[in-house]
Every structure is written in C-alpha cells, then in structure tokens.
Amino acid sequence: MRRFTAEQLRTFATVVEEKTFEEAAPVLGVSASAVSQRIKAMEQACGQILLRRSNPVEPTDPGATVLRLAKQIELLTVESERELTGGDQARRLAIASNSDSLATWLLDALASVPRDERIYCEVHREDERHSSALLRSGSVMGALTVDPQPVQGCSVEVLGSTRYFIAASPDFIDHFFPGTEGVPYMLTEHRLREAPVIQFERKDIMLDDMVQLLAESHGLRPQTQAPRVYIPSSTQYYRSVLLGMGWGAVPDLQAEEALERGELIKLVDRPIDIPIYWQRWTIDSPALQTLTEAIRATAHDRLRQ
Image (cartoon, rainbow, N blue to C red; front, top):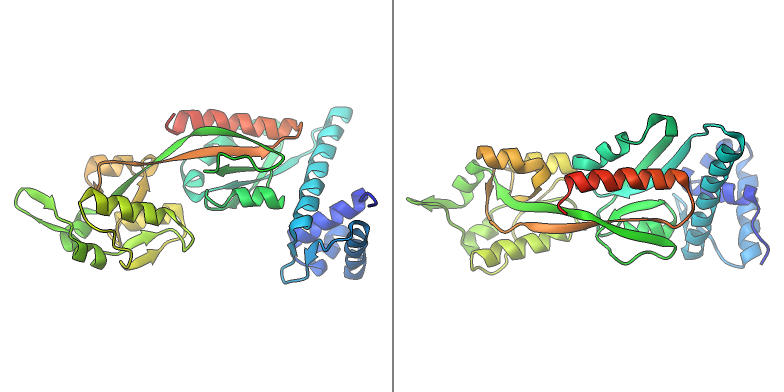
C-alpha cells in the first residue's frame, strides 16, 4: 500500500466535514471532479472503499481509520508549527458531550482554558452511551462517555458521577398520583400507565432504568406503555418536568434549588448515579492536554467524586 499524501488526507477530512464533494471543493480550492479523483486515488492505494457515496457522504470502517489519521496529523502539524516558529496558531479540537454535561458544567471547563492558548472547541452533542462511537469514527478527539473501556488509540479516566433524581411537579403529582390525608402521593400500576414520562430522545436507554426504579421502589411492575413526551434538550427537558408535562430524571446540578423549594418533588428517594469518563486520543498534543486538564479540574469541582 502506498502512503497517503498530506494533500489527500486533508481532502478526505474536508469531504467528511463538508458532507459532499461539491461543498468540499471550494474549501480546498479545486473542482469537485478533482476532489473525487483524490478520493478514488486513496481508495486505489489502499484497496478499500473509504467513503459511502451517500448524501451526506459517510466514512466506511476503513475510512474512519483514515479520518482519525487525517485529524491527528492536522493537529500535530499545527502543534509543531507553534513550537518551531513560536507562533500562536489556533487549534481546533472536536469533542463529544452528552446534553446534561453541556448544560451543567462542561461550558465552565471550556471557558477556563486560557484565551491566549487559542484552543477552540467544536462540541458534538451525543448521548453518553453512544459518544465513544464518535471516537471510533475519528469525528472527535475526546468524548464524555459512560464506557470505561478505552477505544483503540485512546486513554480513559473517570471524572466523577452525575446524580439524577426521579421527580415531578406538585401539580403533576396532584393530577396523576393524588394521595390521601397524610400521604402526599400514591402510585399504582394503572396510574403509572396513564402518567406521561419525559424522554430525552428515542435512543435514550436511561428511560428503562427510570421506569424500573420508580416501579420497584413502590412495589409495582414496570409500566413501559406510559405516554411519552420527547424533549431533545437538557435545559428544556428539565423545564418540561418543572412545568408538569411529565415525570422524569433530573440532574441534581439543575434541580437542587427546585427540590429545596418544593417546586419539584422526588418520587424516589434513591438517586441514579451515572459515572462519566473522559476518553481522548493518546497523542502528544499540548492543546489536547490543556483541554483535558481543564475538564478534569472542573469535573472534580462539579461532579460527585
């Protein structure tokens, strides 16, 4: 196999980022035909298909390896230029974060990176149970994940845990789980079937844990057929629970004051603790190390240790 040139690797990464050959062409300053020829030359050199010609294009499994290589070389090239010339070239780092971390503490970590480092992040929002796939594909250089097993070519460290409480608003409880004198609320299997639950998105498997814990804590069978309200935003998910649109699991970092004021009521005393890991490429990059230190320090202050 012939080695890819720097031009080919930049072309490949640009096509993936821009989604089509046509969109990548003006970024690279060449025609779409020239872009296509470069990708074909790469595939002929390695004897494998690297891109699915869909709309948008998608890397194949071998293409994910090439994308990761292209992004690593791009970052290391910029780092070397800074070291050799004493310049202040900007570094762009793509990372993946779950929505709750992004809404509660990750922005504080990113903001703590010194401005003169000129490190700019492209944050991909992805469920923490699926974010490691972005590392495998080469789309990101680091990811917040619940997976303690490192992706090939990555290191992993535990940052702490995000704590969730199953809760609902008082008016929601009065309507769907009315209690009796001396009993603030009462759950039955019928009531659980009728009461809507807030779900972050359709692939959010945390809902199964929520339903199981809520039912078992009240001696009931899990009711998986309850109406579901889909709110694909951490901030708006929390607000929808606060507004009484359904019951759900809210991070204590968001809900602590509302729980203290009685604006939300715990339906289960026992919390759900989700460990959060930081996985990152194992390359010698000062920018990635600086970002890692900022994430580690902020997580230590904000997450449960």
